[in-house]
Structure formats: structure tokens, C-alpha cells
Length: 166
Image (cartoon, rainbow, N blue to C red; front, side, top):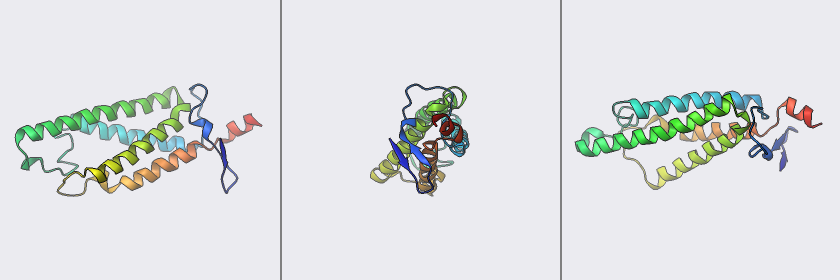
């Protein structure tokens, strides 16, 4: 499916699920660099959840662990570490895509956009009690906009790809 944008660029949705994944990135180069930046940020965030003493729960997310029982606080810290492990795996998959399977990048952008939408929805449905505003909460909609822009740009074939299809 192809969508022509106002500027005349063509958005090619077949880039989401190519016939096979290879190391040729076919989208806009800006989206590729945005993907590198977001992967580094996500990996850093993930490692904090795994390795920080409190998993970032109180020190970053401002969850008042000191008001909880010791066992409840340990349980939440473990949950943050488990969540961090899942995030490490996703960031690791992004790194694999950057190194070996660049044609996966549009699909991974879509996964990140859906994940961010899910986080926003769950955050509204089951809000977390904090003592302040966590950085992730403050930046939620900016991150969604960044990821959506990356997704849309990744679906615009780069000049080399367009020339090959002519």
C-alpha cells in the first residue's frame, strides 16, 4: 500500500513487513539516526531498571518506597528489574536490527509506537502513585510523537531505493 504525501514523497507501507529481512535500510535516513538515538536511550533506561539498587522506582520514578513495608518495596524493585530485562531485550533487538537487519526498523518503530500507546492507556487505567512527576511520565507524549515521526519517516523510501524502483 502506498500513500502520497503533500510534498510528493511516497509512504510505502510494504516496508513494515518486507518479503525478507535484510541489512538494507530502505526508509528515510533521518529515521535511521532517530532509531539509533532512541535505542541508546532505551538501553540506558533498561539497564537502570535492572541494576540500580531501587530499580529507579524511587530515585527516578518518585514512587514512595520508603512508605511501604520492606517486603512490598523489594517486590516492586524486583518487578522493575523484570521490566528492565524485557526492555533490555527490546533494545537488544533494536541493536540487532541496526547491525544486521536494518529492514526491520520500520516494524520495530511500529512495535515501539504500539508499546507507548499501551503505556499511556494503562497509565490512565491503572495510575501509579508517585511523590513527583517521573521523567517518563513528563515525556510520554513527546516520546510518542518522536516514535510516530520515526515510523512515518521510515516508511518513506530513501533516494537510492526510489531510484532502484524506477
